[in-house]
Length: 114
Image 1 (cartoon, rainbow, N blue to C red):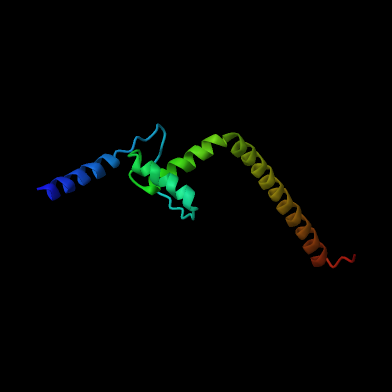
Image 2: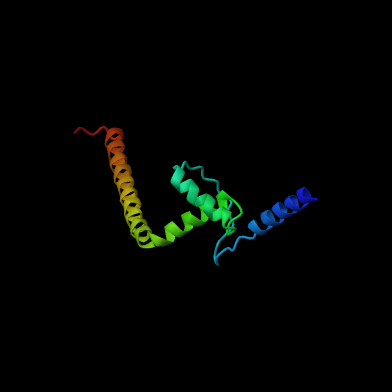
Protein backbone atom coordinates (compact mmCIF):
# COMPACT_ATOMS: atom_id res chain seq x y z
CA UNK A 1 0.00 0.00 0.00
CA UNK A 2 2.81 2.53 0.64
CA UNK A 3 3.84 2.26 -3.03
CA UNK A 4 0.29 3.14 -4.09
CA UNK A 5 0.25 6.15 -1.75
CA UNK A 6 3.61 7.34 -3.10
CA UNK A 7 2.40 7.12 -6.70
CA UNK A 8 -0.81 8.95 -5.81
CA UNK A 9 1.21 11.63 -4.04
CA UNK A 10 3.48 12.10 -7.08
CA UNK A 11 0.45 12.31 -9.36
CA UNK A 12 -1.14 15.00 -7.18
CA UNK A 13 2.17 16.89 -7.12
CA UNK A 14 2.35 16.83 -10.94
CA UNK A 15 -1.25 18.03 -11.19
CA UNK A 16 -0.53 20.88 -8.77
CA UNK A 17 2.56 21.87 -10.76
CA UNK A 18 0.48 22.19 -13.91
CA UNK A 19 -1.52 25.03 -12.37
CA UNK A 20 0.57 27.96 -13.57
CA UNK A 21 -0.50 31.33 -12.26
CA UNK A 22 -0.32 33.28 -15.51
CA UNK A 23 -0.26 37.02 -15.35
CA UNK A 24 -2.70 39.21 -17.19
CA UNK A 25 -1.95 39.82 -20.83
CA UNK A 26 0.13 36.69 -21.35
CA UNK A 27 -0.69 35.47 -24.80
CA UNK A 28 -0.57 32.18 -26.57
CA UNK A 29 2.95 30.82 -26.88
CA UNK A 30 3.22 29.43 -30.41
CA UNK A 31 6.85 30.26 -31.18
CA UNK A 32 9.80 28.05 -30.37
CA UNK A 33 13.22 29.41 -29.39
CA UNK A 34 16.07 27.12 -28.48
CA UNK A 35 18.62 28.50 -26.05
CA UNK A 36 21.66 27.25 -24.19
CA UNK A 37 22.01 28.33 -20.58
CA UNK A 38 24.69 27.84 -17.99
CA UNK A 39 24.24 25.57 -14.98
CA UNK A 40 23.37 28.40 -12.58
CA UNK A 41 20.58 29.74 -14.80
CA UNK A 42 19.25 26.23 -15.39
CA UNK A 43 19.12 25.69 -11.63
CA UNK A 44 17.10 28.89 -11.22
CA UNK A 45 14.68 27.82 -13.96
CA UNK A 46 14.32 24.43 -12.29
CA UNK A 47 13.62 26.16 -8.97
CA UNK A 48 10.72 28.01 -10.57
CA UNK A 49 9.33 24.71 -11.82
CA UNK A 50 9.94 22.93 -8.51
CA UNK A 51 8.17 25.75 -6.64
CA UNK A 52 4.99 24.81 -8.48
CA UNK A 53 4.58 28.17 -10.17
CA UNK A 54 5.33 26.72 -13.60
CA UNK A 55 4.72 23.28 -15.00
CA UNK A 56 7.78 23.17 -17.23
CA UNK A 57 11.13 24.72 -17.98
CA UNK A 58 9.55 26.15 -21.11
CA UNK A 59 6.91 28.07 -19.15
CA UNK A 60 9.44 29.28 -16.59
CA UNK A 61 11.85 30.43 -19.31
CA UNK A 62 9.06 32.21 -21.22
CA UNK A 63 8.15 34.02 -18.00
CA UNK A 64 11.75 35.12 -17.43
CA UNK A 65 12.06 36.37 -21.01
CA UNK A 66 8.82 38.31 -20.68
CA UNK A 67 9.92 39.86 -17.39
CA UNK A 68 13.32 40.76 -18.87
CA UNK A 69 11.67 42.50 -21.81
CA UNK A 70 9.35 44.40 -19.46
CA UNK A 71 12.33 45.46 -17.34
CA UNK A 72 14.12 46.81 -20.42
CA UNK A 73 11.04 48.35 -22.05
CA UNK A 74 12.61 51.80 -22.31
CA UNK A 75 15.63 50.37 -24.14
CA UNK A 76 13.35 48.50 -26.57
CA UNK A 77 11.40 51.69 -27.28
CA UNK A 78 14.62 53.55 -28.12
CA UNK A 79 15.76 50.64 -30.27
CA UNK A 80 12.46 50.61 -32.17
CA UNK A 81 12.87 54.31 -32.91
CA UNK A 82 16.42 53.80 -34.22
CA UNK A 83 15.35 50.80 -36.30
CA UNK A 84 12.59 52.90 -37.83
CA UNK A 85 15.12 55.61 -38.69
CA UNK A 86 17.44 53.02 -40.26
CA UNK A 87 14.56 51.63 -42.34
CA UNK A 88 13.67 55.15 -43.51
CA UNK A 89 17.30 55.77 -44.53
CA UNK A 90 17.42 52.46 -46.42
CA UNK A 91 14.24 53.38 -48.29
CA UNK A 92 15.70 56.79 -49.12
CA UNK A 93 18.94 55.18 -50.30
CA UNK A 94 17.07 52.66 -52.48
CA UNK A 95 15.07 55.49 -54.07
CA UNK A 96 18.25 57.47 -54.68
CA UNK A 97 19.96 54.48 -56.34
CA UNK A 98 16.86 53.70 -58.42
CA UNK A 99 16.70 57.32 -59.60
CA UNK A 100 20.40 57.35 -60.45
CA UNK A 101 20.02 54.05 -62.32
CA UNK A 102 17.09 55.45 -64.34
CA UNK A 103 19.18 58.51 -65.29
CA UNK A 104 22.13 56.33 -66.33
CA UNK A 105 19.91 54.07 -68.42
CA UNK A 106 18.20 57.08 -69.99
CA UNK A 107 21.52 58.62 -70.96
CA UNK A 108 22.74 55.29 -72.37
CA UNK A 109 19.60 54.80 -74.46
CA UNK A 110 19.71 58.32 -75.86
CA UNK A 111 23.29 57.87 -76.95
CA UNK A 112 24.50 60.64 -74.73
CA UNK A 113 28.17 61.04 -73.91
CA UNK A 114 29.58 61.76 -70.55
